[in-house]
Image (cartoon, rainbow, N blue to C red):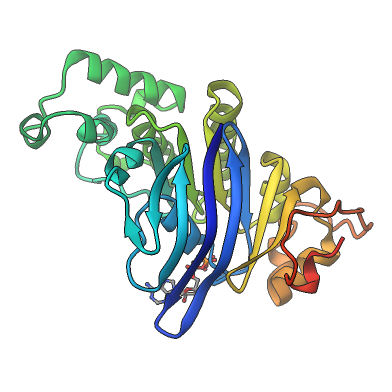
Length: 283
Ligand SMILES: Nc1ncnc2c1ncn2[C@@H]1O[C@H](COP(=O)(O)OP(=O)(O)OP(=O)(O)O)[C@@H](O)[C@H]1O
């Protein structure tokens, strides 16, 4: 089954083109890295996939699990229902820091319970058990009663993933989830996302700054440059010559932050790019 279908998506902010004619398909059960320099359009693309961005300046269409989510800037009628299938994880965690970790995870149920129960935080024993299971799944069950403000950055991100799990997400969109984490926490968060992908079959799309993590955890990479797809193929075939072109001056820092640069050229397979794409994509 196709998890995400994007057809001819373009986005302008005023006169600035953030995305230009993006078309792609992501199959259910894939783990895909979105890479590209700062300002290349990764967040804008993820926000459109999640149905959080639409409106003026957007054209083209996005379908989630075969159902239209938005077309030409207008959200479809069932976008709300589709959003429940999508867990979104942000760099800034988006937790309510004064509330206990368990309550933050229970917030993932809000789309599924009555407004009255949601307003008064009346969660059932089953819901609390499910939230505890989700916390155990991400390895922080012992923090359930702590205020979210007391968690480390890595633990906060894991709590945010647990919240997406109780929501019942089949598709996880993560927008630079490790950008503010140290290497050990980054590794842990990506291992959890990879485990959810491999063991639970979740489709994962993750925007990453550091290419080494994309290579290590995501079999497929999609690279954006100036709002256009310039590479779509195996992340193992991303060679450093291409990446240096993609990232320009930032490449030293972003390509291999914790490993020696391997300049041996790797033969990239021809990638599924439409004609007219920049020379960067030629294998
Ligand atoms: N709400 C907005 N209003 C105006 N311009 C925007 C808005 N959101 C994004 N942009 C612009 O669109 C372009 C793409 O931004 P986007 O945040 O998607 O890039 P990114 O690849 O996620 O960058 P980063 O890695 O720095 O987060 C940038 O030029 C950005 O300034």
